[in-house]
Image (cartoon, rainbow, N blue to C red; front, side, top):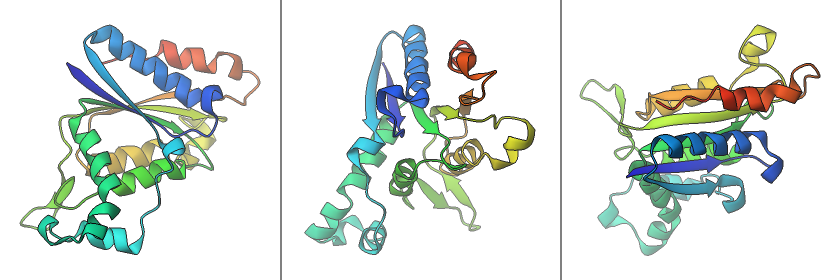
Length: 201
């Protein structure tokens, strides 16, 4: 059975194009793998907190040395890491907001970035990712066109996710874009075009 983790990070709820595109990706996955378990996580609704100094400090304390308060402080992080490690396929809804990802998705990334658990350093001091063997699909939406042309230099969603998730070991990543959603000549067909372009490896 394939395990799918579907992350949503849009503020627009049912009207969100990234959520609609992400849902379409999940449906395509289900078509290819009928025996599939879907775990959905709306990062906006659960309000993942930003890292605090005390939580960050607790990340580096050996498990058997943690106080009860410290254990509680990293419980959410441990849960989020467990979800990622258990998944075979990860679908990430990532609308472009002010040229980058929403803070809820950034908070999720911060909580799953754990030295010795999701990444490490080799004997030469070079980093290596420990979240391997995953397929990642990104459902990206944007009002303008950022895959090419003058807007491309302002896309800090796809390059960032590819770079940082790759740092954690998730190098097999594909981005599907619903773009031009505010462009008069494009917006009517943007979502459908994106959905029609979905291909599941």
